[in-house]
Image 1 (tube, rainbow, N blue to C red):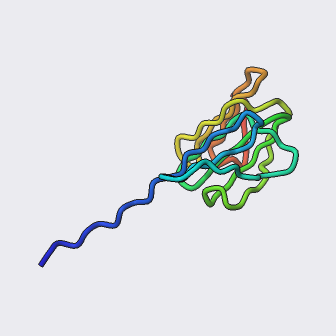
Image 2 (image 1 turned 60 degrees about the vertical axis):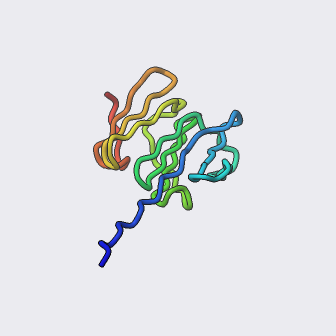
Length: 116
């Protein structure tokens, strides 16, 4: 009798931004697709870890998806500065850099942010 085969883990989508600041999701083996998050929002940074996707832009606009980009919610951010970089080491621990050179940290998955 043959040994059971392990189920292959689905590869995660790749996230990027187009020149107009719209999110773009590329599924493994697929073509890039623009993802509409909110009206009149231009993003400058995107990051993904597991099923969570974060996108930030002008005036401190910050959005999060917990389901690989299907549904999005606005996240409260303590500054009105343009977000230029987002990084998460796990779903709870993350950092955001702003155009003004400030860095904000979260230790609770984005529920609160502190200036570093």
